[in-house]
Image (cartoon, rainbow, N blue to C red; front, side):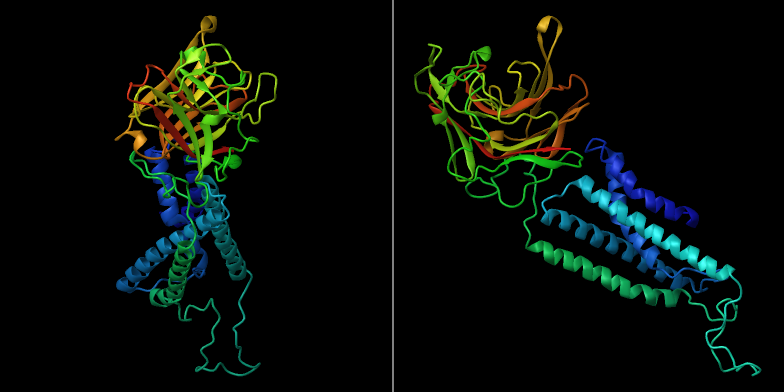
Length: 461
């Protein structure tokens, strides 16, 4: 690359990588820009900033092997420094529980740009010194005395002055390489004792992160590009439901409730909602129940909502846009309808955002957006994503990035569906429900089912 272009390219590389994070997660351009920047650019800027500035008239050494050796060591140093700087920045955000990919990239981009500016400032100063007139020798001869041929001191502009060739430059670089290795080892050592947040593995057979199912360590950052700040978090770490966060029915609660629109066969009751062992448990039981609507229901079940206790009450929490995530283990078997979803605070649907639903089985995850069509018709668009194994075999992180102009669904940190039309723009409540009987009744052999939730977390810009 032209040396005159190297500094501008390095200065802009981090910002280009940051902009690239706006592309879909698997986009090759995004992957290429981010990886090249992280592996090469911060270290290259640091190496260039620490390299002595060449003065006019300086000539490199003529030994080809020495030049190749210097280039190789500079390349190793570049990668080592990049990885060390990246590790330290990431660890700082992880330990403060504020890590996002965009935040780390922005910090590294700023560091890289500052290093480039530092080098350019040094070059400008060196140029000013060279252009400002003759440089006085560091140890001039006394007035009137003849020059001492044994005196090694010469003016820097004197062509006869010995110049540092590649071998001398290599000796100057070597301590920096040792420093980079030390930084990398320090970062690794410090990070060994820290709990690094991880998204759940993408395999549908993933096991809980702790024996009880509750997660350990800091919360994982959103898989979607940020910046983000957390606005809601329930780890279910107590022994009872936090009623400041959750109601146990829909907004039309009268001593329980159901969703008649789906012809479901459960009646939701607070007794079917329990918290223990770091988990929220929604339990469906085949137990004959008569609802306050006078209808007989063969099942009773549990649900939670950030909405109201009753029709005229105020909702606890509503959200317009954000990143909504929950770590859930759905019950096995047909006839159960577990869901993590959002409905308007206006109490009517559509619109509706279904982060995840399992309809008629647990091998296929359903992600959907609903909107009002002509004549008030409920229209919808989404995707049925078939996993490699049954989702009921383990815990999984289901998430939705709801932006002003787009919707992106994630399963275990991997984007599975993106839409840019019919995006809702109204405040919504968050719900976890375990319905029964939609689209068909459970088999006669099924008497109960439990939907377990490890945590629910919401971020916004």
